[in-house]
Image 1 (tube, rainbow, N blue to C red):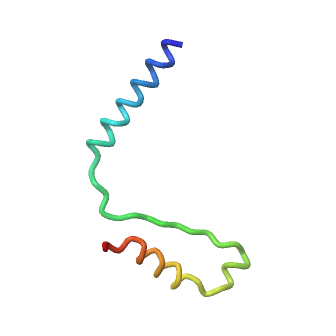
Image 2: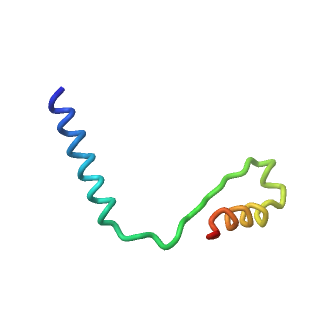
Length: 58
């Protein structure tokens, strides 16, 4: 049990250090999937508008 806790703590610290030292992202990639039937509708513009609105600074 001690070994498992030690390895978990080591991984947590290592992951935290990696996250703090990483380069900031300037873009985000968003993917969405539609069902076969849903793909027949013209929804691309509407989804794009919703996403842009959600990520626009207030």
